[in-house]
Length: 193
Length: 193
Image (cartoon, chains in turn red, green):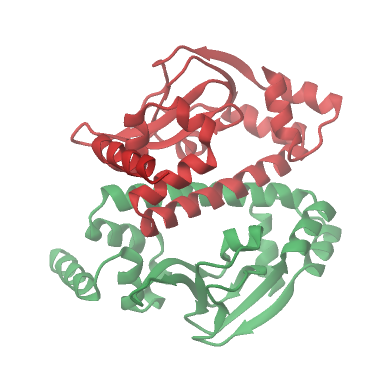
């Protein structure tokens, strides 16, 4: 389980055996069954979570009770309500499991201790957050400039294996469209092939 | 000029005299007059820019020629088209000066070299990007959940001195509202005091 984390870290920075041991000591494993919550909006997000196996989603629920998907997290992804994790404010997002999942959790204080004990992890997180900033910027621009059909195509092209695992109603919510609109888009695309 | 950068860095991490010398060696100064461009959309953003003095804005222009404000950057802020800087893709944003400005520029390759030469800078940028991710998350949630009036109040409360320096039409654009709507909001707020 920890090997997937090491693999992910070592795509960005090198870890010695000693570093690996230190890194491992800061994480706790956790298993979630499908539909179980990792975090509920209103609670404080106490952990940064690495997904070793499975699939989770973050979403919020508006005043009318409608769910709005924010992001999906699968093997090799970090997931959290980042604002709540860093500031201790109540979380705005819910996180739950779409599939049975295996996770590695690190607390706020251990996250600080980790970067002090293994300084190369500052570099790892620096690169991780760089990528995250770019992804957010692209998603924001995409939401402004692309049609629902274009957004769906971009999503499928970037993550074909994952998209196949996600229920259609959640993909529709992620794209900000009704499930019927997504069905129509998929039918249109199938005809064109 | 470099002192403002050191001050900003040392709010997050400690720099030895030797570190400071090394950091300084990677930056080039640049002055911009009011209305001068730092970056034009379509060009590659070749530098990460620290604002020592003055005020800049990033914005994009849609197909109809309408400007959409993205962010403001003033003393102590970093400004760039971050996606373009990191990936080398053409910039989507323009950056220009709202006031005469003094800047410190670092190139993509020097940015990498800097973090290798002064590893504590990985920590600095890690913390900087953490904060930036939170700001983006908050702004996104605010755009969904707050009225234009609430957004204006939040903006003024968080940065009163800066807001006073920014032309009203740019603030309206940042809030995604017409200048007339902003005037009406300000009048209503003045009445209520």
